[in-house]
Image 1: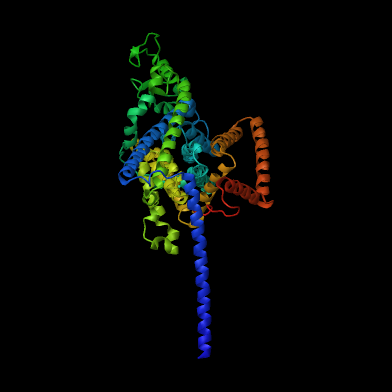
Image 2: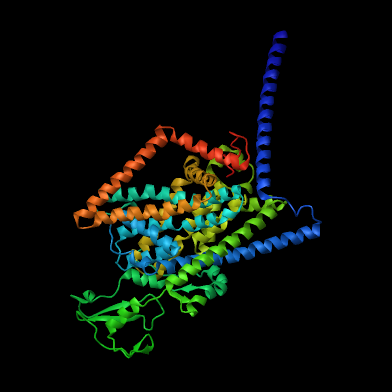
Length: 601
């Protein structure tokens, strides 16, 4: 009996120790949560609404919601104006870059740079689809171009993150992280699938990479076009936006096809026609060659105006091509401004609209978030918080991340509705900044947005009734679907892009210009550098090839040394410690606390 009592006492004592340890852990967790809430509350500012009487409180919430939605409307207009501004600044050069290369690296960088210039992956992929369908760009070259367009489209929400520079440091960090998680996925996806495409093509006796083979098998023998879906968002914003600016995007497609040339007639029989994609011309189609010679027939009208110069049909077609203008409507068009001049003015106007709108959105949301509405808004955006506890308390279900898959579906559906992944991710970026959407849940939204944006080129290809056009559209879809299946299902895989984005967000404590530096390096300098190197190797002369080799060896050497220092000389630890110290000093957190370093940024 004494032995049993002694053993029982030991068990009870051991259990008491375990209970004390659990209580201690819970207390530490509560302390951390309390500190986090204090930091967030300090970042949000004083709560002016909760102390008000109920009627005034409801009126204040209604006013803030109205202001947030009004600012969102003008923010969306600002994004559209920004896109048109870049198109006008780039001019016809955005179309000219697509043709004349078969190098996959050059094709990838063309996709990046062209999308950055026109600020729309839908526009870029639609142009690539047309060019591949018409045989002007080989399918194997169009595939890396599509991958590059995926990277280039993420610059818009990164610009949005930079627009948050006037907000508090915590909101700025979160916004930049939320924006760049889209970029990290796109870059990682390209690093996997572009080499894989080239390797499979190299060892495939019949030719063709992985995406080319699968997409080819998906193309049906016969298909019926369903047309392009209506863009309801564009219809809602067009009333105001078209009074500011309207561009003829099909001009870029025409330029990408190349200017009509007498060389097009050599060796041909019958009639050779050139059809403008732009509907600004009447007629749109011209017979430029007849039986191997240029068409010398003199039409009475040029685009419904008298042909006073006596130009031939061939000369008329060339003149219309050379005189094409992107700017087609708006107050600057009415004042007779040129494309470049209007583009610069609209760039500043769009940035002003976006910064002002974002400021109103973020401040309205943060004031609402201080009240009881915060938990409901967070649940509405973070699907995992709507699910029963079993979905995140069970290890297997937590690893599957059901809420994330629901977010992917929501992101795809929203992007299909608005026909722009840039709009989807740009609207969600301020939500991350305002702590309404976690970075982990922002990530699946961006994956869904990538999938949803593929429908534009896919439906356009179905309507065009061209097999190659449909195949390149399927490549775009496969690239994003396979990428999602690679980088999302397994927790350690989805932690990679999220972790990289989290670190980029923290660089805002080193310099407030971090997003601007990142945009310049990731979307302009590096793509232009690799495009130049690829073009050098594609040259027929030995000089450019030698120069490209020397430059690439120097650059590789510098990067190799930097990587060696980072991995083997303690560079990683020094960098992380420096960034974390700057962050803690700014937020006022105790050294080494790492209060917000886990899953909430």
